[in-house]
View 1: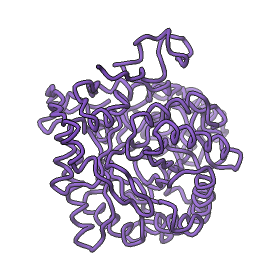
View 2: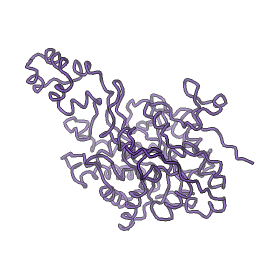
View 3: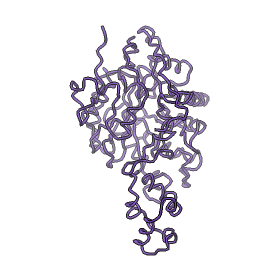
View 4: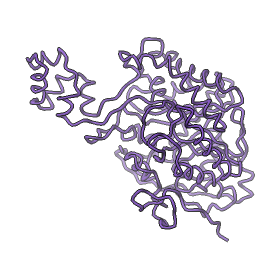
Length: 482
């Protein structure tokens, strides 16, 4: 992962853990209304992809155990990982693109309800993503994958396809780069990746026609499975975020201008709302800043936030960065990963940072966006995340009106009980995240995500372990000290 050139070593802020009485009086542990549902407290475990589903996208026992373990910490809400709305192969990622997935998802809901004693609300994040391929070997790309055009014939002086390919193979990279188009060079150097602007492809051109119904059907399945709501994934490197990005230059009314870029996200929301009714919670996660050259800014996000709030979204969960645009070149045989460049760092900053540091890095943008939403007359709750790992941090954010709900991914992974421990006045027993991104490195390799603070503890006693048997797949149980 990219890191700032300063590489200043930061340490997590002091916990300043409350007593049980102080927690009971705090904003963090006060209820909040999120559309048609109420959270018992303002604590939120955001979506994380743990790579535990089956290859067919089904809920497995490791998936159930993963969410059960977070539920034992009794947060106000848990958002289930990014779950694909299409019934297409996508590896060990959860899917919700067909009714056959509903029974497994219903079991997940039941496990969370039981583990949290009914305290935790459960949402599922709905995602669509476009095709991306692994970086090919140079010779294979030029021999098989590259579509030969007149441009290549003119550059090589050859006519027959085989001769053109042979001539291209003999070129050095500097020469080859002048012959290939920018997209062809990217497909060679990074791997082929579809964009929402590839409207010459019929299935990309027709995205506005098909996505509202796909999202709506997925939301209906989530409702049938017993979830309290859905989070529409409009963030990072994926389809809906790409429609919102200033890099979206579609000229069919679904790009170029702010209004055009907002059009499909609003149509998706309206289709979902019409399908599931007003009693089901529907919100979205989107980017406060894209953190790429020419990308979306806080000013763009303000327009989006006001529009989403006016449309009736139940909550707005904010994130940052995580784009393909500045991703590092993958190794041959691997796919580009959207969290390896600067924008990826801004999404998941580590303890090696610039002077701003990694803790609460997203809060200033959240404060600005929330203020703009309030000025527009909307009381839509704003969820903030990003390096929040102490009581004083979380409580101060809420007290200053910078957000309404506090989310923590990496700290919750380090200690799924940390919200509960704070609420009970047992903060001294919290296992603190070190923000080294050990978990992110596993995700990048598509390995089962764990935390370095617990995945080697008492491994033999854990019934769910990694395939090699060396790592436990759930955090150790918490036994309160006497």
